[in-house]
Length: 290
Image (tube, rainbow, N blue to C red; front, side, top):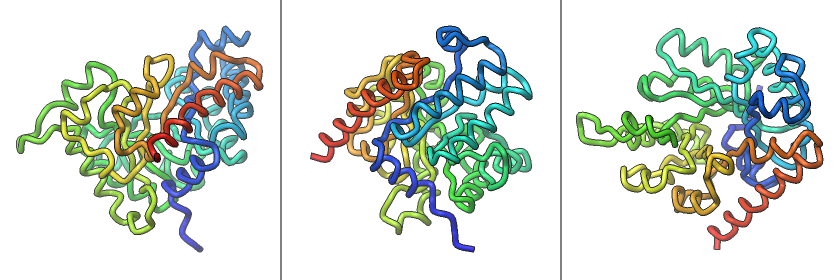
C-alpha cells in the first residue's frame, strides 16, 4: 500500500486551486435563527450540510468548530461526523477545530479519534492545545503523518488572556510561543525534502499585532501551515495578515466564519460572500509574491 499524500501537500494544492481562504462552520444559535432554523439537532444538520454544499467549488478548506456540535449531545456529534464525511465526499479539506491536548494514553485516544483512517471523526487536520508541552502531542503528530493528515498547534492566540502563558519566558529565557513554534517546526523535518509545506502547523491569530515579531517567533521557519483565525467579524483585515505574517504569507490559511455565514441562507449568497473574501486574499498573496 502506498503512503498517503501528506496533508501539507494537499493543502497547498487546495490553495492553488481555490485560494487560501478557510471558512469556519460555527453554528451559532443566532445564525440558525437568522436562517429560519430551530436551535436543535435538525436545525444544526440543515445549517451545516447546506453550508458545505454552498461552499463546494468556491473554497478548498472548511473548519467546523466541534463545541457547537458537542453542545447538542450525541445527536450533535453525529451531525459533526456527517459534516466530516460530506467534506470528504466533496473533496473539501476539513480542519476540525477541537483544540484537544493531553498526555499518554489520553492523547493516543484523541489521535485515534481525529486522525486515524476509518474513525468517523477523522478530519484532514485537527487543532491541538500545546500547553501541556509540544512533546506531549507527539502521538498525534506521528499519527497525522502516518495517515496523511495534519495538526495545528496553538501558538499565539488573539484572546487577551492567552498572553499570560504565551508571552511568558521559559527558564532558559525564551518566550513560550517562540519555543512552541520551534518545536512544531522540528516536527516538519521529515517532510521538508518535498519542497512544500509540512503537515504540522500553528494557530496564530490575525489580530495579534506585532506580538510574533516582538517575541521572536519565526513563523516562516516552521515550514508548516499557519491557521489564522480572526478575519472579518473578529476585526482582522488583510492589512493585519500582511503585518502579522510578513515573510510567511504563502503559508497562511486565513479563516472567517460569520462574515460568510451571515450571508445565508441562500447558497448563492454564501458562495458570493466567500468568493469576495477569497478574492481579497488572492490579491494579498499576489502582492506578496511581487
